Length: 184
Image 1 (tube, one colour):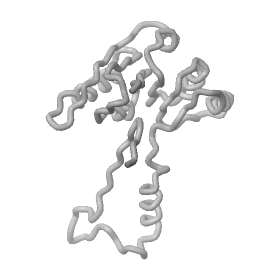
Image 2: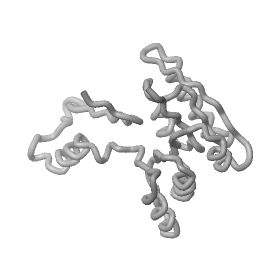
Image 3: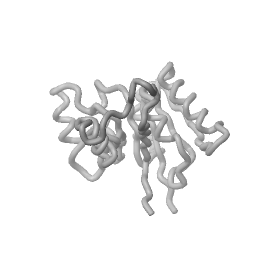
Image 4: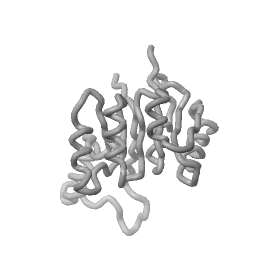
């Protein structure tokens, strides 16, 4: 089995690290991170280290940190990954996605992608071509999220879920995002 190689670019939001929350046998353990030193990069590194060192179901990611000038150009030139994860840095995200897909890399990115109408040409670039950009946060498109939204919009179907007598919620939902999903 050929392993996929993930690269992270300026992981400015915890969604980036959450993609590494569980072991994935189809993902190479060497993770290259191109990011400016600072609190955002450190938060990413800390969270991944927690995943690696937890007692139950630890991961075994080996982070390789890259810093310095022209990180995006170096990421492309170094050729360490098959796909790039982007989370945070919304004001430049779509332009970055366009650069990466044009360079032959697939992209997983959290929302929002489009924050300004001046970015529309980048949206056109990202949605055409052999490399694709996909939404990292698939939760809103899941059947579970759609059913939950419908239930919340129509409480007469099921009554209320929280009573004043019991402060604990009657239903708790969790969301899990995967780089890949295997069914059956």
